[in-house]
Amino acid sequence: MKKREILWSMGLAAGRTLMKRLPAKQRYQLAGALGKILSRLFPWQRRAVRRNLEVIRSFGGRRVRVDNVFRNFGYTLADFLLDGTPEVRVEGREKAEEAFRQGKGALFLTSHLGSWELGGKILAQWGWDATAVYQPYRSRAMQKFIQRRRAAGLEYLPVGKGAAVGMARVLARGGALAVLADRPFGEEGESVLLCGRPARLPKGPFVFAVRQGSPVLPSFVLLEGPGRYRAVIEDPLWPAGKGPEAVKELLDRMARILEKYVLNHPDQWYCFESVWKIAPAPGV
Image (cartoon, rainbow, N blue to C red; front, side, top):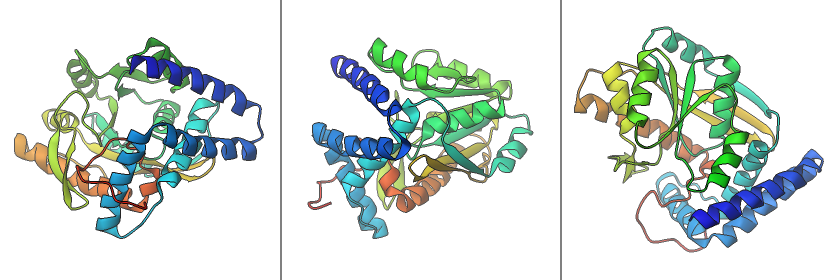
């Protein structure tokens, strides 16, 4: 895994150098093609995407090709690698500001859908007291490369020892936490229904929301076309009481919102692990 990450960092650096020299149209054509090629180089991830798409198709009736997922991932990765901020319009900022004014902090919960890294840049541009929670890479080279590309103006908190204390401190001072909430990292997670089947979402962010009385703000930055995005902030989810029941209630509400976005944008869900344990379906 560590050696693979080192190779990844070298490949991403080379791709960034090449794409910087190309006009926008050719840059995105290359990025989309490279995304499709990468899916063939990593068959395990391709199979996982196929399995996930089959569940989405069975539940929602929409068929999406695996190649389209990796093409869009290439577009999003190109925007992350290059300097500057792509075109983005934000819907729902007023909801976030109103929730933030309550003085309880806020948890911006998103998923591996669209450009989650661009969401961090948006918070940094707003000048908010915001901290992004992330899963660190094993390779120093990869971690260093990725961190250089991330938004300046944000604090970053790695998952691991001390993360729980750090997250509690951010909310206690009325700050914002940005967390990926579609795959458990460093925990077993909690079972919820997603697209009609049991899946596991991380439980930790919802535990903190209930303990601190902080609102959960489901947020997604959606790809609308090469270099164009739409950031959407949903209505805040406030904890209804204390204890395990309140945590589960928040989790279920978040699952319904995540389900809506996954069904509407399955070709932007870059979840390269099988969310549901099923056999792969042919021809997707």
